[in-house]
Amino acid sequence: QVQLVESGGGLVQPGGSLRLSCADSRRFFSINVMGWYRQAPGKERQLVAIITPGGATTYADSVKGRFTISRDNAKNTVYLQMNSLKPEDTDVYYCYARVEALSRDYWGQGTAVTVSS
Image 1 (cartoon, rainbow, N blue to C red):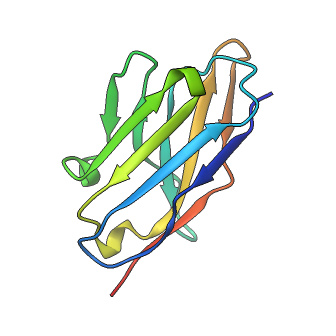
Image 2 (image 1 turned 135 degrees about the vertical axis):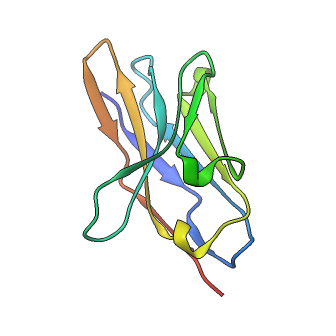
């Protein structure tokens, strides 16, 4: 149905930048809300940013002004540009997609982001 494939994680120094990408490799259905969550070991998964098909966005307070979410509806792809990264941004980042036609939520496999000198 929907298969989310993420890329772009890695190791970066504090103050650096990374860009995450997530694409639905099958593209059978239109995706409604897309976004990114992150999770540290032993903690709950938390919202980073989400975006609607029309481009409305919501960000966690901790990333406002540093991260930018965008999407390409034709490609069922969502991006997360992360600037001014801090060590506390270190987490596994998960892509999220909501398909209203199926009343289902989908998650990517997760991509690790490590911010360290």
